[in-house]
Length: 314
Image (cartoon, rainbow, N blue to C red; front, side, top):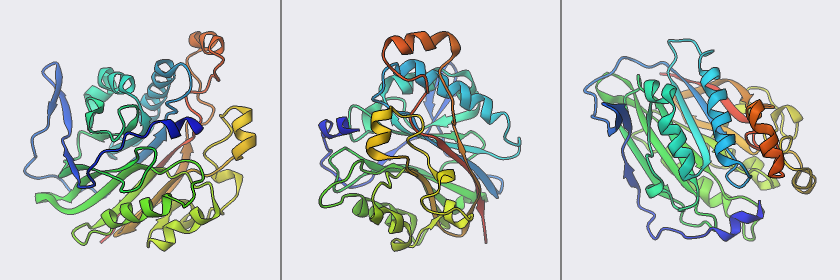
């Protein structure tokens, strides 16, 4: 985890960077054209997963993660559209995403290359079900970060004529303890986006790196609800932990198992049926010996992911 500290190449602007969504058409990824209308969207299935960019065997691990997600998507009821958040992507991960047949057939993507990331090394990206129209895609680099983190937002209309917008924010807050702390300011910035008065409801998901006591109250301090706690979960209980079990023993002993990954929300939405995904998911059998030769673990990543239903309320 300490390797994050050597990555800082921060962008100079904190103004939103407008991006596009892309659709696979005529043999390539093309910018989408804004749809004039849409059918009502009462529910969206949201998945979020951090795929460790530092561990050895990155392409093998990402391929395993995508294979797992392809299978998982088939278990989701056909009438429910899907959004997938990724954190800690690298350039080669984007290539694998762009080449995956199931993604080409069913999803829009937000990044065809790393050019909009705050860091040239790693960043966040989002997949959006083709059935979901996209009103806006934008990225805001955090004002304070030593690790090139940002808030990456997608605005989704849930009624015809682009009315009743939901804002989905994919983020990876600062890692490690810092003095003074950086994550509170980053959470406040994200909260401003989610509480925009023009937005019907907002959802934040990702690796929020909740490793210190002050992290446990950042959601309430920013008028956000924590889907895990709202669903009856208790802070500090193993059933909520998303990091540590698939990490090197030395890191697990140093940092302990933690609930780093969260889904927070506000406004006229509810988040239901939260569950962890990616548990004990390993690279394909034929690649495990190669991973061991790297001295790497066989898991596709050190994080569990999250999956939940985002339900629009009136």
